[in-house]
Length: 382
Image (cartoon, rainbow, N blue to C red; front, side, top):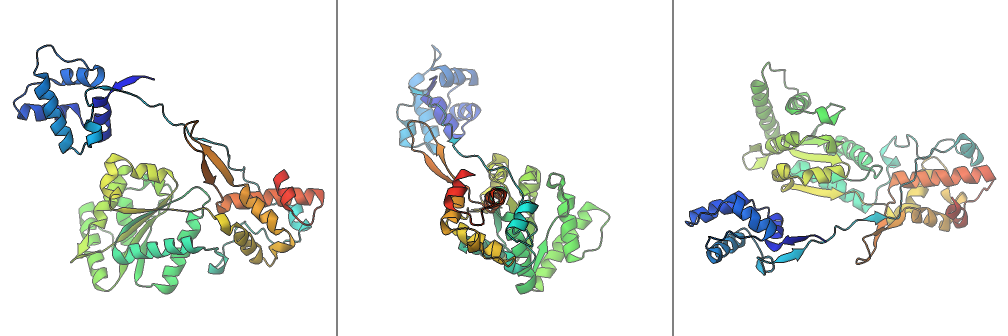
């Protein structure tokens, strides 16, 4: 493994730049070039003519002021072995999506596919406690004027949660005005798109210039807040937003009426959104944003299957044994291997999309071989 200096490692950990250190030394009356510091940092080589002890003392003091721990400063001028990166190797692959065949529908006497276009009313939505907490958090974003990011895997149920939240607000919270940019391609959302969405929601007349429109938006939000309204901007597929738009959302969020913010913000996106919010250029947004992750169904898988079949008038227990439902859940479990020196990590991928796929696969196979009752043994063979 390649050797690196401890100084280089600490610079990297603290995000310290060489130019900053050279400038700090200059303020102490010590002239030390960036090139010389680079050689010290990368190769441990000092110039023959310099006050090495004084420079070391001042650099240690500077790093301490930047938040360096005693462990980081210990043996700062020595070498350390660069650890080989940990490579995560999951032993699980998500199943290829599969639809329920017409033969399987006829064989099991199903009038409808339980997983295709199945959400037509609030009762069709399967909610567990974690989902209800997310709905409350989204409503809180409106009432408290806070920022929330709902992050989840593809097929984890984010869009259903958004639809359930929109329905609940329309039915139970008429004081909340939802603002949703209309651009289908989220990568093309701009400041103008967001202003247009607010104008549309608050029925603001078109203004010829961007400056006039922005002024009208601010006035309308404050007036609406005076009238007792709450405002919540919701952007789905937010992982496609640009960093500039995310920073703009933070500036809109900062609008206040007295001591109250006039708008809350909810971003909904796939796991790439978490990485995007981890970037340095959007850190002011991230520091103020509550990030929530969609959890897998886990122990709720049998209840989820029963709910889906009940909504189409079928008793799932007539088709699946209890062990079979547990085995379908087990199909979505795996391990993440971190290498020989680390313990394996359990991985749960029992998201609705994957459960739907495994149920369809098993039912298609059962219909093809003429099995009316799906057992645990049959699930394991698929």
